[in-house]
Picture 1 (cartoon, rainbow, N blue to C red):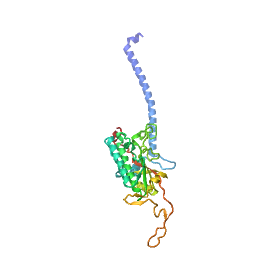
Picture 2: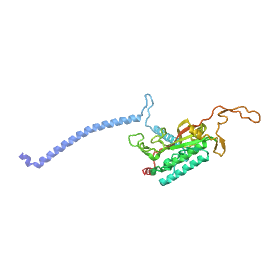
Picture 3: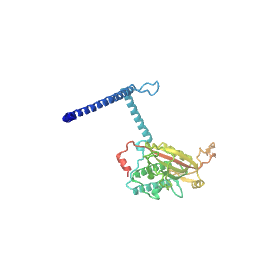
Picture 4: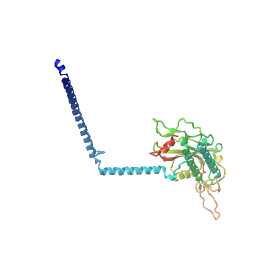
Length: 358
């Protein structure tokens, strides 16, 4: 002990060197063991890379698809073809830009309501000028009852969409008016629309989360607003605005109306057509023998010659009419539901996102 104390500095240095040597030896052993693991991982990664370079067979006996330059070019060509097909699908759904209904943004709720009132008055006048009847007790407000009778304020983000609905309804009303054969009876019961003012962002955990949809708790006291039961809407892909046109007429009016919508070139799709017998009250309302046609010519609302009649041979120069009625035409109540389609933008503009938050 005395010798240790006499040579204290030397002994402490020696102890420190021994400790460092042991620590270094331990680190060396640990590095050696880790090196083995790293080598194993490198070997495994090399094997995986070699397997990838050899290609992958998607089925037994099929040729392997390898990551070669030729295959990369083919994959790029397939991707470009897929993108082109995607654009064709978008164009087929949304149609050409000039055939779309854009809608105009309104400065405030009062301006929007004034525009809607003016349009509703115009549609009612159009019906009156053409000899078309509206419901006697409560004439249709063409989907805008809340703005005509009980003006409400919708969020600013909805102003342009509501005006878009106004433009679509204007198109549907005019197509229906022009679909009526000359002198045929027609009564427009209502034109209904989706109430986009009551839509909210669907919360997480429900179908279509993050998208805009109907608020199930919103009051629905308006008689010309509805939630469509059938729609072409696909969350994140295709958006729709649904409309429901209810009218009383003969079958040729319905047939022409459907064909005009289908052949219009507009991004419109008919989702449902319902037919029911017209009530006795409606038949009495439309039983007037003479009505004004679209071109100003009056005509009797009798059966169509040559269609509901059996033709009789012509006798003499007087061409005596001896047609015998086979079937009398009946008025029917038609309900036609129409979707306006638009493709969801994959990357909406920042300005549009800002507007939607207002």
